[in-house]
Image 1: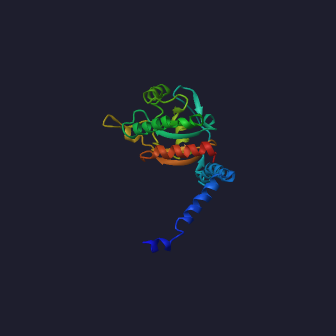
Image 2 (image 1 turned 180 degrees about the vertical axis):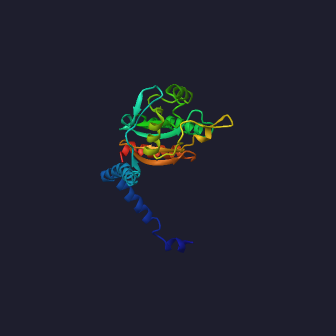
Image 3 (image 1 turned 90 degrees about the horizontal axis):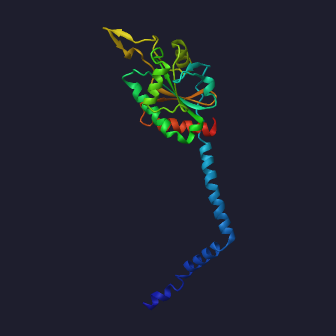
Length: 232
């Protein structure tokens, strides 16, 4: 037993030396300076990593348009310049996809509080002859649309089609009224695209998003926030 002990007489010395060096380092002002600098570098590194995220593509630029909002006021491209905004396409007597699209935009409105000063939602009616400002105002109240953040637009059919089809590149029906089938209105004939469109401060289209994507609210608001914060 004693031979075994004598064979390793210095077993505790390296550990003791390391503890001593650590104690001296912690007591050094240089140690604390380096620790503070490392802490400051972390957010800078995070910003650099975020800056490496590529900008969204530019998919087109909108021409000017002027329509009417749910309050009957003239509203168009010039009112949206300087904002990041999302376009959706609905009509108030739609029995199928439009209620879901509107509900999704309502969730975007609720979750966009952090960028609300620079962000807007715009619903274009593809049935503008029926969806007068008064009809849209009632629809807006039903869905708790913020009068400041969320505009619902109507206007002459040809002007609406120019804004939706020529400008935003979303399909909509050629006829301004539903077809009549056996005396019943065929609302399916008022077909239209169901994607959301993200537009930047310079009226450039930056993204299309399937409205039935389960993650669409997260994706749209992530990209909108990037445009608001970075401007590209």
